[in-house]
Length: 233
Ligand SMILES: [Zn+2]
Image (cartoon, rainbow, N blue to C red):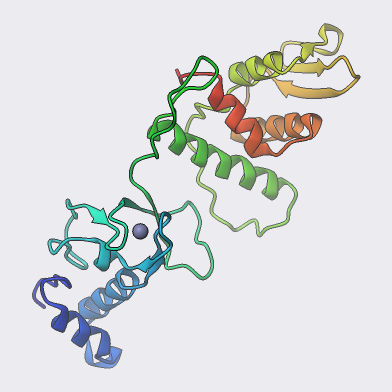
């Protein structure tokens, strides 16, 4: 089967989608499946108009072919988009969704606020998903078979950053309750939380949950606080 460029040749794409599977070769069937996913409309995060990968791509997009080097642009609001494949399949979606390619420019930052790079935001999202999934798994609310992708090394949720966060939020180390591996933190109103001096993603997830419970906020709020501490180094 020849290369298929749905935007250059919509007729061929339409014909493939309409051909019953039994009349296709295995290669054509794979291409039909890829085409069906690429023609599933998903909402633009800016204007909410639904559009498919093919709608947003230019005519160099080849279905089932090599890498696509063009851009994705919402035909309605002209925002440049990125196709994002989440860590786990979200039921009822084609396995991907749209996200802005570039962050919305913020107001001029003063000393307390700073611009966050797209890379930092990606780290935040990745680690939030990891932390949430790990805690959920620990609570056994989901199948153990669910595939969880854990970043090799966490950059945002580290014990150093968590300690800096706690200190900035008025927590102090309770030396009597701390040793080489564990730290007990106290606040003047009597609240207590616990962290580890170091640990893998699962341990850090537990620490973030402990901090969130003690602070009475969401885990995402804690992660945003970690991000606000400054550059990830
Ligand atoms: Zn749009």
